[in-house]
Image (cartoon, rainbow, N blue to C red):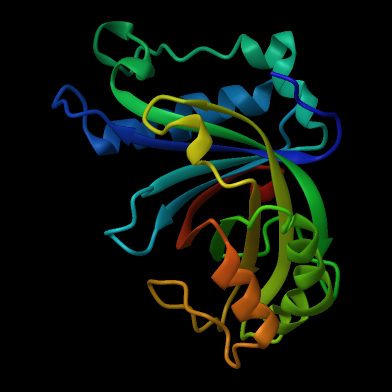
Length: 234
């Protein structure tokens, strides 16, 4: 993959295949005790978080988010050497035998915060992915920079907002062209008022109506943090 240099994130979305060979608990144990520590041990990934969707009906219930100072590290030999096999699994097989997965690689576009926040500042995130209308990327960027970020920052418990552009995708259960081009992650801590589903901010501005109404696709969800790893856990 042609992955650019610079800061970014890797998002792994996973679910069990239709099999009773392993449990969800074993899958999560493998991530927490084997796979995520192995990824951090490469030295190129500084922090990781495992998240669970709040809405049980949302399609992507489980994600792991890895933060990289240089996203191009994923093309290097250390990252490529991370194993998917484990003695935790039946017959020491690969976790890929038991799970369907999707990996998305995102380059950072903007970090917005009103004051410096620690690495692990949040318990809840809003995941907001969007494919704007044809030719609408510049307007989407301006909407965030000139209006929406400031509006979101006034919500209870808000900590920071980070925006990304997708630069690569590996998948097992989702067609590659299904991933929207842009992702925004809004982070919230104590005192937030977020429910199970993402709802529009009040008031809904005319610019918001234009951006959302013209978008080709949107994908929004609320996730609660399950566990932090690496620098985020210090």
